[in-house]
Length: 336
Image (cartoon, rainbow, N blue to C red; front, side, top):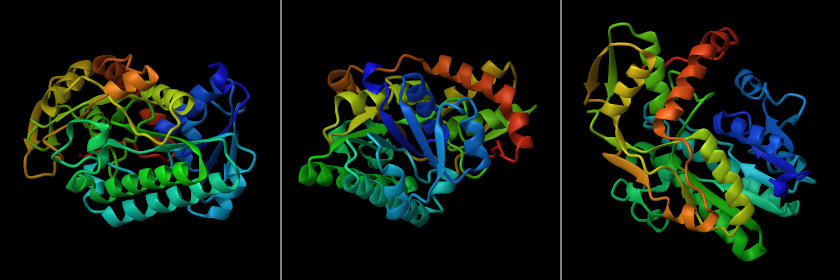
């Protein structure tokens, strides 16, 4: 952790789910952390454990002028800012997902160049992979065919972010790390009805239900999930050890069907529910998991939490916080 001590670090998206965990880990490692945010209720709630240890400033990250202002004097930038959601949100908002993410990517990286920031992390996603290349996806497969149709706009935005990162590293000699987190979950995840991903969506439904729940898709599709604490550790390791604009997957070797995932969550809640699957609803790729051999080789990274361990921690947090979060004006329920 000596690398991070007294480093001036900007975490764009630091008020979000993954970003807030990254902020906590950076602060505990001795970094001087700044979080640009619009001071939303959710961001303030997510960062409550760090108050007094970090600096929070207001900024519009789609504006180069604002990005230059917050990047001035900074050593390292993590770009986790952007608009994302689960399948239910993504299928109807491809244009919104593309535009909002591309604008921030362009503005923040250009600001980092102009302000002479030492290192930069481009946070991409395994959504860059196509449906045909989504099982055991290797880093070199990312630009083969279009991204998965259900995340088409978001997938292309992340591809463009990677291209920009590579071009800036080549032309300007910038030290840039590129990471592709897989399906990430954990405490402070997005449990909102409109935008939640699969694990928080299922957790919210199970919490609310006494007799039965309905899940999108056949239940036979498989996914690989990675706990948020493992992801932020990988982000920091990549930025410290592999800032050469060469993407690295951050995922897990555990592959699980959505059907088995649902039953695991029900069991951890201690409930007995009838589970119904709605095959008429979108379900994304039949299989999706990323090869993490490169992460092991390049930065010595591998997940330390099993899916079961991560689910137990996430469910425990949700039970303890859902009522307080609802009262604060943040909606943590889902019907997906």
